Image (tube, rainbow, N blue to C red; front, side):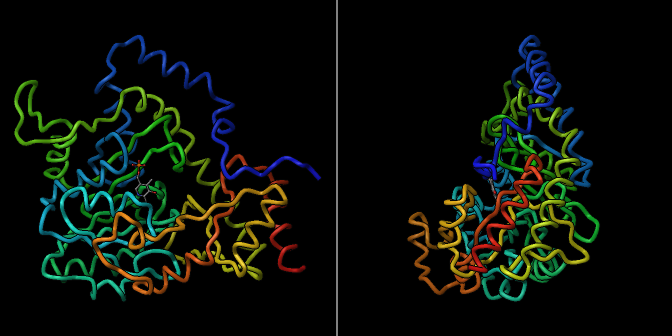
Length: 368
Ligand SMILES: *Cc1c(COP(=O)(O)O)cnc(C)c1O
């Protein structure tokens, strides 16, 4: 048996076979001098439209800024409330708070996404929007969420940071709400080589408003129509992103194939994520619910297999959320899951032998 560790992620391995193509793209931008808003930015935005199923895509500096810009474009700020899931990455709640609005949480379902049945109780007269997170790359139950949003005249902002390529009833994430924000952080399914992100929207008016907000509200070189951010997507990252994007479909197949193997081989020992008929998940993370989770993680670590927890501290229990005064017990489903969840290594470069090792060691742990 190999003594090499099964790493949780290995990004240099991903680019090994086409590093020269990346270096060429990098050099082209270096020599162009167009480091800010060079032609590759629009080229990349255009190329991404197909993945979002909408007419308008806008590169931004990162996915968190994308969420802030989306909220601001919908005039959400002080005095308003936005509902999101308590089990997401910090940025989902942080972006809401950074606009001056207050985050409200609603509990999640077995799919780790907002549970429509819990949503309505979180709505108040201040609520302006619902922000479903397609957590782990699995699409949230958007029809039910949108029906509730419609009934209460709320906007829907998709936090699609983990879900590029995922589909719901055949429609890509990014096309399911008023605005969606994606991240191109190195650890996401489509990554660049630093921070970057993009927004998608079916609405031309929102697109124009967000274009202003990402660039000082500038309408021409010297005139600002409203105060905005400096949150442009770097030309260099866009150029590298174009090289990466060509490989996304193959990577997605890789994620999905590993997920299928884990699901089939582990379903009798841990609780594995389902994929319903109308869902197409991209498995940014493969999260299982495991008995004796901490012991299992320690056992796997001893066997040379890296695992992680996404995310060990729920958002309402973060020190930053102290002012919300939400005690333990506020969101029983998320709180139960967080005690039992563990993310297994999943990335297209994982070798068959490594996948088999992960499966075998988890099974060994439970048969002992
Ligand atoms: C990564 C992530 C973000 C933030 O994206 P950045 O590009 O890192 O700012 C937001 N929401 C979720 C669910 C994420 O996973």
